[in-house]
Image (tube, rainbow, N blue to C red; front, side, top):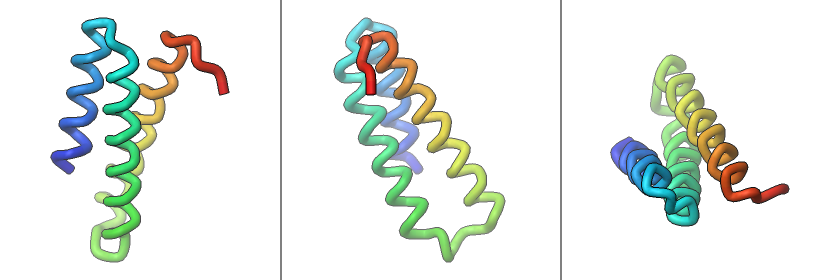
Length: 75
């Protein structure tokens, strides 16, 4: 899950510098990659690993919502 981790780290770095547009791009890419990883390997990983990956996706989505709130993006 290196790509997911690096995307989250990049997003945090951009957000800390006030560049929320790029933070949102990084978070969206990390979410997309994590969802793809979950779907592509769901038959090959343990339920604990599945749960951990699902928690990571939820955390990324929470971060995305926080960034959107800062940017005043409504859905």
